[in-house]
Amino acid sequence: MKTLSSTQAADWHEGRRLRAWELHHIGWTQQQIAAALGVTQSAVSKWLSRARQSGGAALRRKKAPGPAARLTSAQRAQLPALLNQGAEAFGFRGAVWTRARVAAVIRKTFGVSYHVGHISRILKAIRWSRQQPIRRARQRNEQAIQHWCEQDAPALEKKRSTSNAP
Image (cartoon, rainbow, N blue to C red; front, side, top):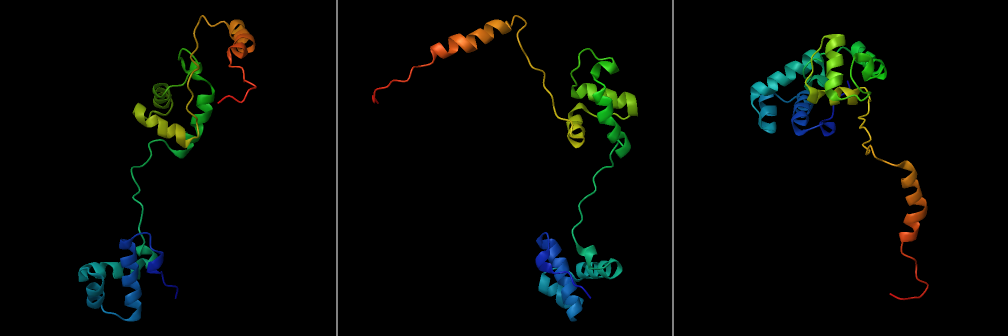
């Protein structure tokens, strides 16, 4: 029979339960196990009955499941294709996706309502990166900028001196 080692426990609570299971297999009584581990005899009784019913792995720590997802996995898989159509395909002005717009598309398409603050989690889960529009002045003159970068900026840089002055 394969025994679970208390040295491989995720935390000390789990280690204590596994140690109780090990001591039970050695032949210790519940009262002795409770005294050795500093717990009540009823706690040891619950641990041992759980281990007898479902095996020693039942004494391992379990992650809390949390609430059920409102979007099904199939719906979540459809979301990137919907977003790739562009924001304008859903009646929004401009091609920029915002969390509020994504929430509106989810509500309209799937009938599921999400708070805008939670949309970023959904986008992260589908590996949709957060895009931010590039903000540039309307009066921007690309030719003047290029001329400045090529001609004026190098002239303004400090010339290196050839002397060994500090």
